[in-house]
Length: 351
Image (cartoon, rainbow, N blue to C red; front, top):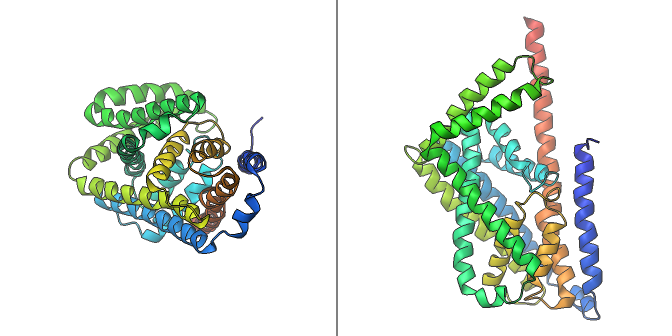
């Protein structure tokens, strides 16, 4: 049975809420009420503000990288496509739905399809590189605390996640170094897939020709990021690092609101692991998985009675706020598409 977007969203929220309720119920004790009553709301507002700043930085990264390829995309439009992508990410396994949204919105702003795909792919490559470097540095700083405390199941999940992350970095680099071989593999995939899309297009030859052209554009754009457009790669790396630092500080502010220290090193390392685990396509939006991994990791540094409160607040800011902001951005895109359709219909009537 094929599920609608609303059904996937409901399923994602259900997974998340179910785990949160279980975590809160199993960690609730006589101290929990006191933690709730004494929570400093200033740090909650600060956490939300930093989350919003991080999203703006993400939009800035898109603007900088597309600008290095010769396109002018407004920061407002880039931030809006980031927000819309967040909503799509909540209903797709491994949060993968945001990438197609950003590619589509870049294309709508005048960026060639291949160039738009290259920007989004290089985004993910930069995320992988930055997270890997940060993870290695932080891992060396807290090896004893982490590896001596986690469960075997989480240990295995972390290893699998790191392997996937490294593979995701290597594949685009191989495409840059060996474009002809990579294109042959992709075109074989296209030729196998296109006949199965006969319901979508009556002209398979057109689809194959389109794929051939856009794969060339994609490879050319990726090559440019290591050549003439390397300033965009540098700018993308800087904004990527800044994005993850600001994003990771959200959890530290929540910890401070609970009366704990920011635990920056431990919290950053935990969130790197969580971010990597989230890329494994297990549930819509990685909901449920995120809550479980967060609980398992932060239990190492947070008192038991606090962990439920922490998970609720952190997921509100990093997940439920995504749904709210994404819905607003998606509505703006929907209105634009309706307006463009009406304009196109009006032009046809004149003809």
